[in-house]
Structures are given as C-alpha cells and as structure tokens.
View 1 (cartoon, rainbow, N blue to C red):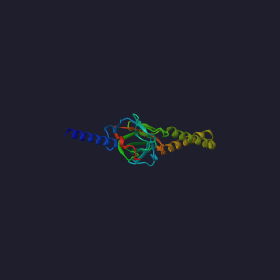
View 2 (view 1 turned 90 degrees about the vertical axis):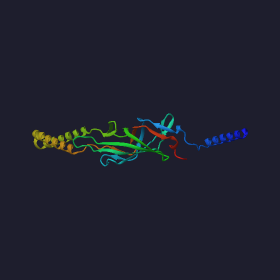
View 3 (view 1 turned 180 degrees about the vertical axis):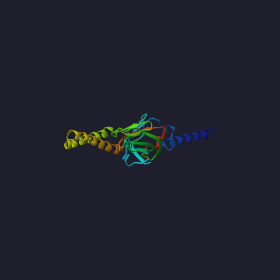
View 4 (view 1 turned 180 degrees about the horizontal axis):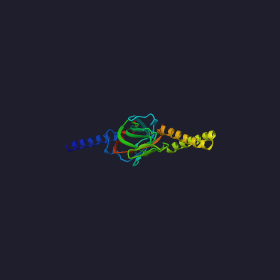
Length: 223
C-alpha cells in the first residue's frame, strides 16, 4: 500500500513539473508592473493640431518612438499608440491673450492590442517652435508676439512719415507719421496673435499623472 501511495505522489509531481515547463500555468504575480506617477515618456504626434481649427473634445493621437524601460524591463515598447483629447482650445486675442491648447492623454494601446487606461499630461514640447508649456496640467501656449505688433505700428508710421514728407515737407512728415502710427495700431489690434500649431511628428513629452499597472505578459504582440 505504501508503495502504491509513493507511486501516486511521484506521478503527481511529474505532471505538475510538465505543466510548469509547458508554460500553460497562470501568469505569476511578477508579470504585473506599476509605472509610477511622474514618469515621463517621449511621444511623436501623429496628426497636425492648430488652435485655428481645433475644437475642445477633438481626439489626439501619438506614438512612442523609442522603448521605455524601467529596471531593465521594457514597459512601453516602441510603436505603442497613445490616445487623448483636447480639453481646452483658445485662439490668440487681438489685443491680449495667447493661443493655448490643453491635451489630456487617456489610454495606451500596445502593439499586441493590450489597452491600458491612464491619466497623462504634456510636460514638454521640445519639437514645437515658439511654444512653451505652462501650469501643472501642461497647457501648450504660443509665445508672445508683442514685438511683431510693435513692429507693425513702427513700420506703418515710418511709411506714413515718408509719404507725408514728400507731400508737405517737415510738417507733412509729422502728420504722416501720426496717421501712419494710428493705422498701424489699428492693424495690430485687428490682427489675432499667432496660433499654436503642432505638426505631425512633433516631439511631446507625456507625464503619467497617476500610477498605472500593466500586465507585462500581455505587452508583446504574438509572433
């Protein structure tokens, strides 16, 4: 009887070993990994965005161009899609106010199709010219174009002075400069500030706003 029980135990042990080696056992707890809040991931924008045409609620699509690694493990491989939406859009004002765009990232879609919900904001836009990021939420803001408007006023005033000088001497030059300056000021006030424009391929640095747990066994696409 003892010999029979010993054989049963040995057979059960062999079956368990074969199941483990075949890889059909349930994923281990170590297959889950947490991307901590504050992590910054570089992205590449997939479509053009401009405050001239964009609306709040419009979708935003980006992609990781380089594998993101934590503790020698690829947590976000290259080619992972990141989706978001425009939460705020503001065109530049005629007198004051900068053009602004606020993007919130909401999900990551891995090459395998595995999708993870996240909260992400823009931390930096190194690929965007004449734009900067302000505030904790990562609003992308067009840099000031005050100098350009001042230049418009000065240029128009100079042109008026030349025309006035040709027509009426020194007195005419003064009047022409004044009229030209007023006209230039009117043009500057009627002209909107520059729009924020992000071209396809623009580099954007996304910051993870809260911890995101991923199942690393589902990250890689099946071969």
